[in-house]
Image (cartoon, rainbow, N blue to C red; front, side, top):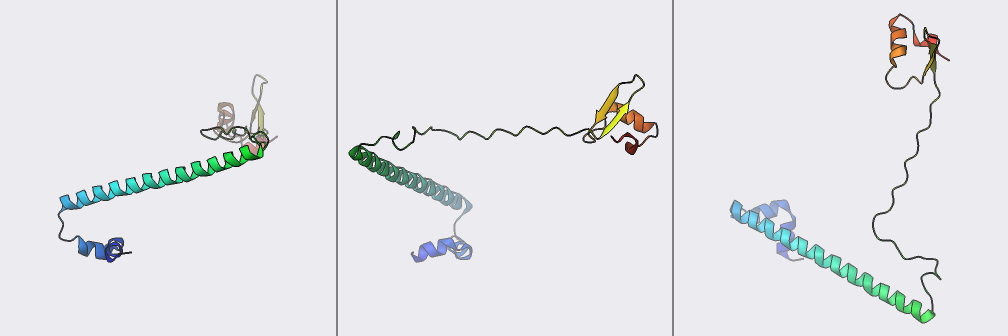
Length: 135
């Protein structure tokens, strides 16, 4: 690596090197560096794709010479796109922990999770406790 390259990689020496530049010149320098980085990344991506394509052609050639097809290998044509997300697991039911019978004789049950149902809240407001409702 050249001396210029080494000085550009260290903040303190970079500051000394560009101290005389104006803000406008620094912004132009930053834009130019951004363009160079984008171009390098694009070139690198093209190179990788090119190598991948060459390898694929070699494999196809070898398979043709051997008289093999993708089905012989147990491989179907690869699907393009995103992988399917795993299905969400259905929540398991939680057994009721509390139970009360209202004035009409209707039985109400509650797991003890989440907001307190109105029937239970009214029961508790009358001075009763959760322990009295345990199943």
